[in-house]
Every structure is written in structure tokens, then in C-alpha cells.
Length: 138
Image (cartoon, rainbow, N blue to C red; front, side, top):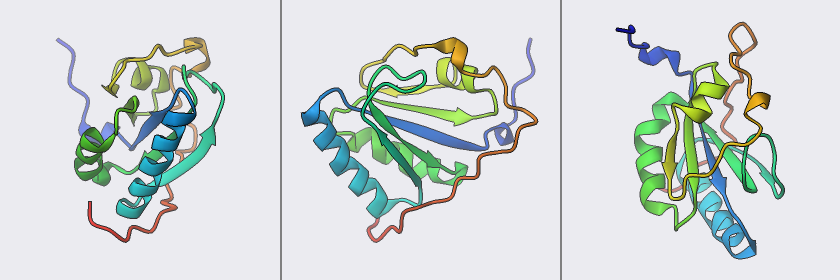
């Protein structure tokens, strides 16, 4: 039997907020504003076209391990019908997107799997620098 991974294997998390049309983009904009008002996260830029392994336009929210317990449950009940992928960053992007992922709503295909590195161990860690200033409680 395989030895379990230690929790400190996770260095952060990403949530990918997907939208498929102008109406869903407007919902995603509202959700983005609500996230920024409530959580110390790093809001990534908008991708209005397909990028990387993602099957829909989206934006990413990067967050630290200590934000998971509050942010992810909040996202579950406030996603307003949007499809969301949440995955850890364990320095194994392919496994994180394909195996270690949580989906809220529709499960989308992960495209161009070969573009996802198997491992980024030994590369510099991406520092999550929150670019939000929460003013409201979750």
C-alpha cells in the first residue's frame, strides 16, 4: 500500500471560475467582486478565450492553504451556478488538475494534458501575493 502524502505537500490552491457566454461572464464578474471583498486571495486576469488546459474562458483565484477552510465552502454555496475547478498546488500540475481536483457544477474536460508539466519540483515556487483588501466578513 502506498504511503499517504503529508498535508504540507500542498503549497497553495487555485480556483478556476469558468463562464461560457456574456450572461455567465456577468455572473462571474459579480462573484469576483464578492470574493475580493471577503477574502485575501490573488485574483488572476480574465481569459476570454481558451487558455492552457481549460475548456472554457475563465479567471483564476490563487489562495493560500490557510484560506481553504473558509473560502472553498463559501464558494460552494455562492457560485451562482458557475462551474468551478479547485485544485491544490503540490508541484505536480498534471496530477493536481486531473486527479486531485474538486469540481463544483459541470465537470469539464481538461484539454491539452501534455501541456501540463508532470512536475515542477525544483522550480521556484509561485508566491501567492493577495491583491485584494477584504472589507466584508465571509
